[in-house]
Length: 357
Ligand SMILES: C[S@@+](CC[C@H](N)C(=O)[O-])C[C@H]1O[C@@H](n2cnc3c(N)ncnc32)[C@H](O)[C@@H]1O
Ligand code: SF4
Image 1 (cartoon, protein in one colour):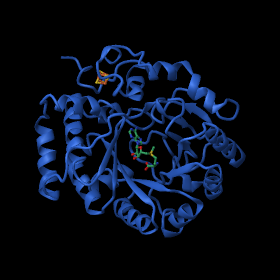
Image 2 (cartoon, helix red, strand yellow; image 1 turned 135 degrees about the vertical axis):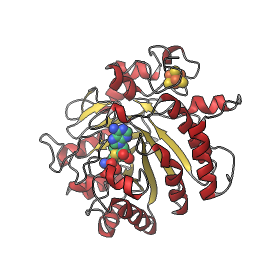
Image 3 (cartoon, helix red, strand yellow; image 1 turned 90 degrees about the vertical axis):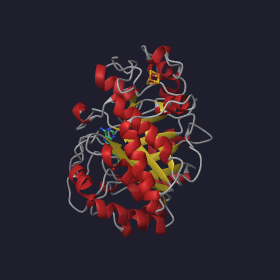
C-alpha cells in the first residue's frame, strides 16, 4: 500500500479522564511541544498529499475537545477533501453542543469507548457516571446523523463481560464494534493482559459476534484472521469461548447471518500511521517508535520509504511470525512485540503459535 487508509492524529495528550490503561498517559494539562494550529494545518496538507483515495484522518487523543481550534482543523481537513473521524473522551465536555459542533465542522463518524458493564467501566475510566454518559452521547450522535462506533478494550477486568457489551451495542443499534487488545504501553500494564489461550477464545467469540448486525474489527489482534482460517478447518474455541457465545445467544438470540470478517486488516505501519501530539510520526499509537516528525519531515515519504515500515509490510519478522503461513493476513501485533521485547519486528507473544508449548 503506498498510502495508509487511516492517519491517526493525537491532537493532544490533555484529557479530563485518567483511564487505568491509557496508552497516552493522558493528564489534565496539555504537554509542552504540542502541535499548534499552524502545525496542524500543515499536517493535514501532508495527509492530503497522499492523493486519492485519501486516507481518513482520525482526530484522537487524549481528548480532542481539550483543543479550542478543533472545529477549524476539521473544517480545513474537509476543504482538503479528507474524510474525518473523531475519538473524543466521554467527559462533561462531550454534550449535544460539542457533538453538533463536530458534525457541523464535517466529522463523519465518532468512536466512543465502552469497556464493560457500568461498575467496571466506571472503575476503569476513573469517573462515576461515565458509562451512562457514553450511552447518552452515542444516542445524541446517532440523532445528529453521525456514524457511531464503540471501542472496547480487552483485558483481565473486561474479558468475562464481552458478550454483555456486544449485547448493549446491538440493543443501541450501533453498527461498528472495534475491539482493542491491551498493549503494555503508557499506563497499560502487562499483567492486565489476558493469556494467549484466552486471546484465542476471544477471537473465536468475536467471529461469532460478527454474525449479528454488527461490523466487528480488532486492533492489535491481527491473528483473528488466522483463527478465521483455522475455523474453516474445524478448529473451535475453549471454555471461555463457549461461555461468551452462550451469553450472547442468551441476550441476543441466534446469529442472523454467517460470520462476516474482513480478510485483509491493517497492521501498525501497514495501512495506518500515527502522528503524536508533538508531531512524532510512528507506525501506530501503541508502538511509540519515532520515524520522524511532521514539523520537518514529509509524512508521505516517511510512510512510503521508512525501512521499518517496509520491513513490516514485507513481513521481514522474527519467527514464528516471519515464517508463519498466515503472516500476510496477520503479521502479529507489532506494538505488542515491541512492548514485550523492544523489537517491533519480533514475534507477537499473545499469539498461540508464539506461546511456549
Ligand atoms: C487511543 S483511545 C482514543 C480515545 C479516547 N482517549 C478514549 O480513551 O476513548 C482509542 C481506544 O484505545 C484504547 N486504549 C487506550 N490505551 C490502550 C492500551 N494501552 N492498549 C489497548 N487499547 C488501549 C482506549 O480504551 C480506546 O477505546
Ligand atoms: S505466528 Fe505471528 S503471523 Fe502467525 S498467526 Fe501468530 S501472530 Fe500471526
